[in-house]
Image (cartoon, rainbow, N blue to C red; front, side, top):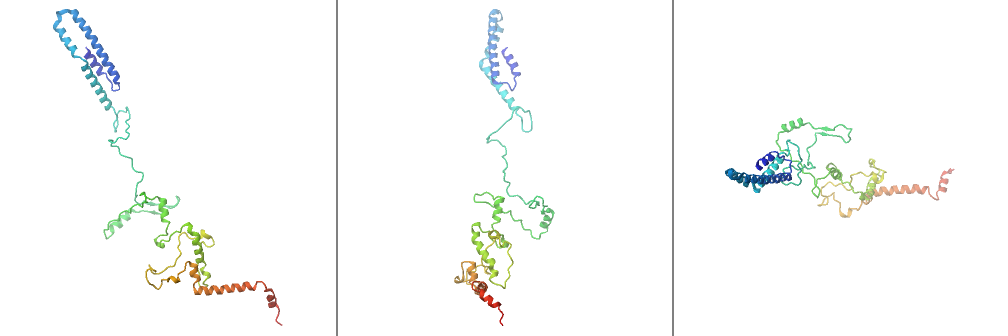
Length: 314
């Protein structure tokens, strides 16, 4: 009797039923089994010895339903509930949505990691835009023309590999701002890599630059074009410039040469070299005497001489 009741209850179990309810049902089944066994024993005692063979078979069946058997049935019920709950978990393609599965720091999970934010070296763009957003595209790549040029080339030379990205000391790639600052340090190979002097050296270089600008006062037979930054002070200096003497040889001081200046002829500054020139010194002296004479003619003690010059000679 107890077996049939438990089987009926087992068929009605739901995956969402808790284990406590299963245990309570098993306990109630055991209590009902014990009550039925007591009733059957009392009825057997009342029936007498007439039904001896049938009563003995029923007692043997009741003795077989022990606590171990009920525990095994309880374990089977728990296993079936767990299996049904696992089958009801929604799959990736879809299914019954009962609960969400969240995996945190699961080393065995095969979930792909997030892609890196740095895409690396990108290929050249198809369209080159202007400096302002209102300008039209300055250049557009023609892929068909590039393919024709590559196919019509007589030599099958492999394409050079992409240059490695410029890195700083820490190993990180340079940003656009750092690349621009590095590019503006020199004027480029077409301008002999003229450096951009530091701001701390501008006051000293301005004096040298001003002396070089006034070189037309030393030689009246030469004409120099006016500089665009003349009269603006330090702000009028060009961005990239260098002061020196252009020599024809690559290593003027590496060996003996006619163009190499001896150590005794070298001066410390550009002004000293200009003043040391004999022709420039002679011209400067003559101009100085002219200025002094014109100033002396209008100076102190010259009024009587000017009045005497105005008087007629007869």
